[in-house]
Image 1 (cartoon, one colour):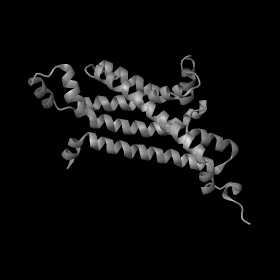
Image 2: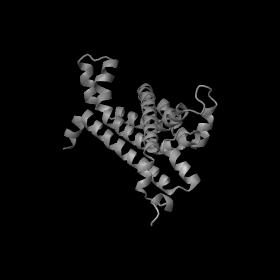
Image 3: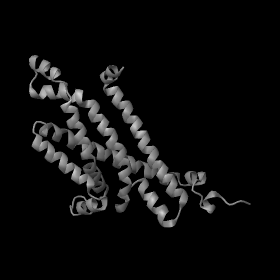
Image 4: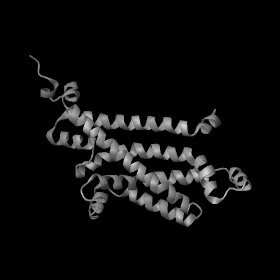
Length: 225
């Protein structure tokens, strides 16, 4: 009688998926939660900061430079730094904040590029119609910059899905927890399934955001046809 794929410790094992469904669903839920929370936090920081500094080359260079430096910090070092804050500690919040900081380099640059690409004619026309600074920003500049901003969100989301696995350092890594556990026990099916799950999640979120981007910016599709 042949052994099951679990006993043989095969890389590809349908029995693993069927018997460990609860573990996979829990890891997926945590991975999605951490990713979405980090990207949303990154957007909430990046967009206002970009709006504030866009008129000054010095401030723009300083902000984007700082975000780039943060992006180059090794994940272990950044997590260790965040541990020092008593309101974070070894929690999901630490992972979310770290991932949000990593996303800023992408989100800030795309938001600034999108705002800089707003046609001057559109701005002048809005001012001629009596639009103040606030209304000009919300009704003209941000909507026209939205394609670039959403493109940045897509890139940041895919990057965050991959980086979220590093949250396993503090036990909040979603699929990363399964990968670490599988590597420690040489459980091949667990390592491969969690790895494939991470890739599929990144592809699914990117496809979903692409649909959102196209629905939110129908004029950009019309301009490209």
